Picture (cartoon, helix red, strand yellow):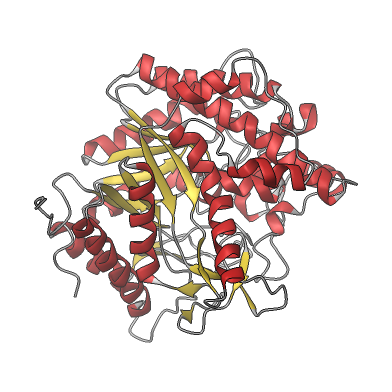
Length: 488
């Protein structure tokens, strides 16, 4: 009989913390030599249910945005002013007991045009200050290299990741920051939610004006191939520059269930699952999976690979797999079944689940299912780097924010993570999305709040920007102090 010790809790050194992105918090979009990014040419969505608004950018819209020097219509240009308030914000994270702070480096702070001859010292120095502030409180930075914030100059010059030339620009940037911060950052990630590239501009930086559906799909997957290669090169760079550091990939996990036991629904669910896991197959296993051959053929997609690309992918596999998890969806072969919104996508509505104010289905058990599926498929350390509840927080008459709904959401997901660890999963950390209120990725609104810390700013940018802990702040502090044991 085979037996193995079963863990009953999170391991020592578990990376509790929170996650952000430069384009959603920093602001200071035109200070200290920074260039404009793809995130900063996307207007606030008129329809708050349209999480795909960040992909709906045309050349006309781009020209209009570049000609506009203000942040009036472009909330990600102002963020929540982390650029000037990072010391206060990191102190609040330290007060909660954070072990890790996931953040991104804005590529255009380092290379304003993406491919400048020399890096921008003011940008490098800013992140030195941020990392030093983290070190003061023994908080590990977990740094995303590309989080939907490509320098817009590369879109104008070569249509972003549609061009193979962008690989060289990116790897010059990654080599620069790896060398600069090799003694300050132990954990890196390449591309945030890399599968978002299948939806277009937000992740590819490529304009699609006038393209047919098939042409758009070709552009998406070719752009993604260039990102796969760039990721593999970055992995090799880091391992050579700082052998003690680790670097992972990052996927937006789209957990699907069959709408019925009908085999055609089960088959459709398997197909959707494969399309999601394709990205981690390439970055963790180091090769394109066979199941994509038929999909590419049916959609007239032909990947243009240069000599040596396959070898690069094999040799540049990541050290760990990180992912976002917010909800699950239902898959069906019936195109007319009831749909609901989700993180960057739409899927089938599950009658057994409740939904958030934005229609995202709340499914804590799905996180355990995802963790087990990832572990059984890949057997590499896993890292939940985004999980949280966007809600319309209200300041009560007593002057406090009583966000019991957020506490309950996070509690239930942490319980399921603990169960997955008992199942045998190697889980290295958990960083909730938006530890401090920030600009929404999809709709660029401020009123969709995720944080443990309230920021006094409305959707139009009005407010004092003062920070105020919510009830969840004190609850999460207790969770971290007990290493996940105290969840009430």
